[in-house]
Each structure stands twice: as C-alpha cells, then as structure tokens.
Length: 117
Length: 108
Image (cartoon, rainbow over all chains, first blue to last red; front, side, top):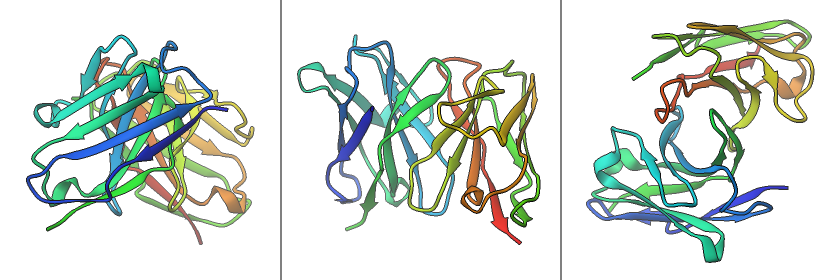
C-alpha cells in the first residue's frame, strides 16, 4: 500500500519560506510516477502547485512558478517543497500526492501551514 | 488555462436518491478528466479517471461519463458515507493540471 506523509513547520512568518517534505513508502520515488504538491486554503478548493519526476524534471503551476521549488531525494525516498515570499494567502493544508499521467491516485493526509507573524 | 466549472455548488438530497454532478470545461479536455471525493478533514480520494473508469475499490454506484467539454458524475443511490464534496480535475493540456471548484452533496 502506497503511503505518503508530509512533515514540516506548521507556522511560517510572512515573507519567509515554507518548507515541507513528503516521505513515500510502498513505492519507489524512482518509479514511473510524478510526485505532486497540492494545497487547499481553509474552506476553499484544491490548487495544484507542481510535481517532480525522479529524474529531477519539474512542472509548476504558472501562478506560483516564480516562488516554488520542488526537489527529490532518491536516497531517502522523499521529495520536498519550498515556497518563498509567503503571505497570508499561502495559508492552506498542503498535500503531497502520487500522480499518474492524467490524475492523482494516492494522497498524503495533509498538513496545515499557517502564515502569520 | 483550462477552467472547470462545477454545478451545482450544493446538492441537497436524501439517502437512496440519485445524485447527478456536472463539470464543464472551458475547452475540450477529451477524456482526460478525473473525479475525487473529499470528506471533512480528509484528503481527496480518486473515484473516476479517464472520465468513466472507476478507480480501485470504488463502488459500482459511482459512474462517470462525458467527453470534450461536458462531464457527469452520477451516484445511483446515495449512501450515508457519500455525503461529501466532489471535485473534477483535468490534465488535457499537459503539464497544466486544474481542479473544478467542487460540488457539495449534503443531506436534505
């Protein structure tokens, strides 16, 4: 069974950098899947942030591209998200997830990140 | 960017009733459309992929149909555990990936 688990600070100061890591079990990060980040502001819908392949290739949401970096650590079977210059609008539950070609089949439980001083 | 519009925003139904949810794309997405179910405090769960294929373990009462710009998710007879928010998602113009705004199915 594929499992994903997000970890990282739950509170980030405005203008700072949000950093999260997703540990993957039950599948290899080097498999033929893309590894995604999706977020959901409180009470709102889902927003795709971006994804990475084990080769290091990345795709980002154009609306966030200038602030997002996704990286992979094959030795630890995990991948990470960095979002810079955060504001209150970046407060959300952040999910890591496994992507297939056209959809997302496994999701982590999500972690709430609040941007506040 | 392809925009997905879901309707209605809220659907009030009783257990045992049939639910019909709509997802309309701003341009053709062929059949590159998926549906997810999300319950409060939980991650989304994949229900339907490629417009009409049920994901592993999804009950037969869930069905999807459509192609191009108009898609439907049908729950043939609502069970108590089906009351949730449902999202559609497209990935026609790879790598762009977008979600619809969601439809909440609530108990009448």
